[in-house]
Length: 323
Image 1 (cartoon, rainbow, N blue to C red):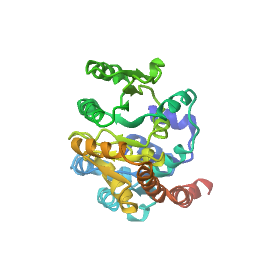
Image 2 (image 1 turned 135 degrees about the horizontal axis):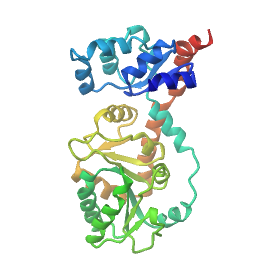
Image 3 (image 1 turned 30 degrees about the vertical axis):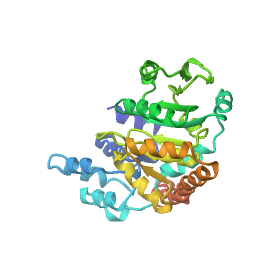
Image 4 (image 1 turned 180 degrees about the vertical axis):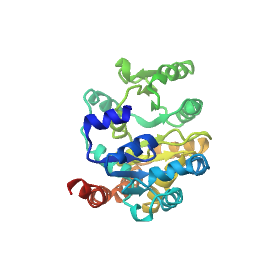
């Protein structure tokens, strides 16, 4: 009933679904209204494929996928899975990953207010960012900061936890180790005695990517995690490091590495320490080379994606709306 009320109220002319957000009731009831459907950046993990291939689910999934006029998968592997589950080969089209294009667009936005003082405070510090970290990685981040301080006395580690609500707990653990911690949400300044800056706010990660030379993208150091979007860090011009446990983002890493082998580096905890030490003590010219590799690979991957997606929407979806 909720879906029907929504459709009656808003009377959409087209419906675009993203990645793997597919709900059979929503898809089928939307299609019954004659509304053309598209699925962009279509993902299909092996786990989802196996679940949807099971006897109780497969007929419903096939009926759902048969309603789409366009499915734009992220890889050949995923295209095959969608076809096995019931999508017609004629509606499968490749366009590239919209996350690349979105990251480039986001990197061009102006910085938010209140960051000028922070940017100024970073100019005379050696700094790196641990972004989107999970609770399982916090011990490692503390150990890494402690180790790096032996090599880089004026080190500043910026931590942006995936769940900002964990900021206070992380702050407490750093302080228990004797480190000075400033907290973004509390308006703390980055003075000379601050070792760690805690970004426990929403919507500002891209601005911090733009202020640092090196970013580790978390959710990736510990088995069972599944990574986070690397494109935002690369688009901001960071040297990009991430772990090995990154789920479907592995395809993003491999695509960027095809563009430039130096664009993204996967590391374990020991490798993260070694690489951070190397970068934090390196000449600016070397850092510039590595930052350019990440940015260039990301922009090459993003090239033409928005145009291809729009052309597919025009030919497969909008022409049905305009008839």
